[in-house]
Structures are given as structure tokens and as C-alpha cells.
Image (tube, rainbow, N blue to C red; front, side):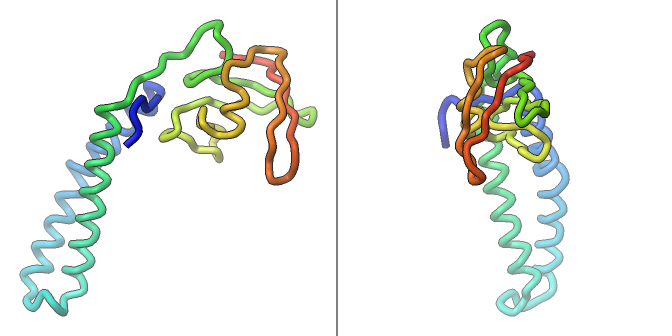
Amino acid sequence: MKNNLKLTKSGLNDLKNELAELVNVKRPKLVDRLAYARSQGDLSENADYQSAREELEFLDGRIDELGELIKTASVVSQPTGSGVGVGTTVTVKVNNSKVVFNIVGEWEADPINKKISHQSPLGLALTGKKVGDKIEVEAPAGTIKYEIVNVE
């Protein structure tokens, strides 16, 4: 597990909500399913029992992982005046279009929703930059040029 995990307050709340859902809703249902499957007789040929047991092992692993993440995470407040960093929203101009990205911790990244990790190639290139700065990022399609037009 990585130390010094950075998360936004929202990201930490999302992890806590996921953990609560797993512990309070999904795990009890899976335990009930496992008990029912166990009551059906011969466990060596009971596919539902085997499946439920594997799902419970996976779920318990995720619960442990989330618990550790929450325990070791540091919440990053939105920096003011220090440029782009975790917790900031940055507007960039690329190919005469404006795109808005939220810079988040790596566990919160969701590129489809424009939440990019500070550890991603674009996130790394943007970190510490200010309005007016220009950057270039290597992408599979080639080099992409960005100009920072707003940081909040």
C-alpha cells in the first residue's frame, strides 16, 4: 500500500461511502447467500457455494483495502495561488477548444468525467503551473499542446 495517498475531501467521502456500502449491505447479503448455499448439501459439487465463497473473499479484500486507504490518506485542500495541484479545477485551451479538468488523487481518477490524477502524464505536466503557462504532453496520437486559462 502506498504511503502519503492524496485525496480530495470528496474523494475520501466516496471511499468511506463505498466501504460503508460493502460492510453494511453487500457483505451481509453475501454471507446470507453463502449460508443458504452451504445448507444445500454436498459442498464439493455446489457451484453456488464456491462462487459465493470466492465473492466473499474478493469483497473482504476490497473492504481491507478501503480501510487501509482511508486510514493512510491525507486530504488535500484546494491550494490557493499556488497553481495547479490536487483539489484544483483547471481550464485549458487545446486546439482552440476549452476543456475543464479536476485534478484529483490517483484513487479518484475518472478520465471520462474529466477527473485526472495528479500522477497521470497530463496531471504531472499541469502540477505547479499557473494561468498563461503552456505545456506539451506526449499522447498516443502525438504531442498535445495545452495553455492554462484558469485555475480554481
